[in-house]
Length: 88
Image (cartoon, rainbow, N blue to C red):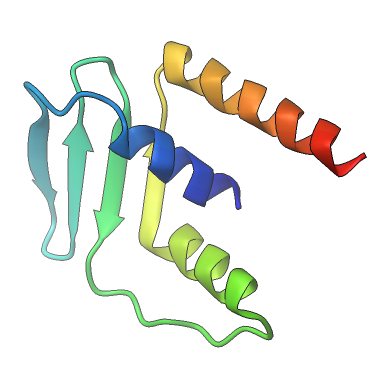
């Protein structure tokens, strides 16, 4: 679920001034002003999984690579701590 959480944070950051670069024929990289980067592999086949949650997470891991800036990375770490605390 880590990639899905990173994507949510990436989508909530400001898109003003973002750069979009073509990486080969099948991928693009979006870089926000804050330093967050997302690489989207456009032509990835979906894999089958036993449960819908696993399928969504598995396909997100194959289709996206997210690198958050320091500010947003710490936001994600705090979200992980909150989730772990709620599970206890």
